[in-house]
Image 1 (cartoon, rainbow, N blue to C red):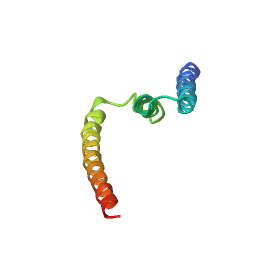
Image 2 (image 1 turned 180 degrees about the vertical axis):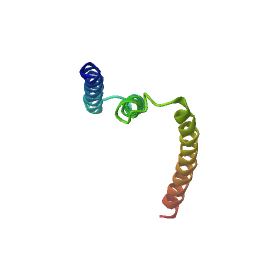
Image 3 (image 1 turned 90 degrees about the vertical axis):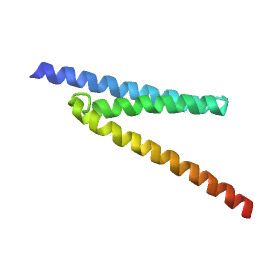
Image 4 (image 1 turned 180 degrees about the horizontal axis):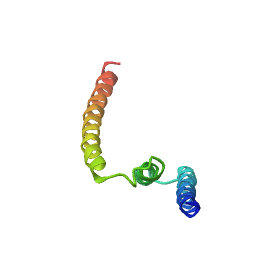
Length: 101
């Protein structure tokens, strides 16, 4: 039992230090003079990696059954589609407000 806890702690600390390293890299990148599109692309990519690590290891979904993922993926797709629809509408409203003022 002790060996299993040590191996589990080693994984958790490895992931934690990996997340810490990614965060430090993001902060350093924020102070660089990069084109906006490049910076946002890299930051979004790193954020997705960090979110996947947090979900997999700290929320313990790495060891769940595949049926849980099959349940969550349609919900994720629905949320992303709804966000896309809402963002398009909000930018249209912002444009209309700028025309009125």
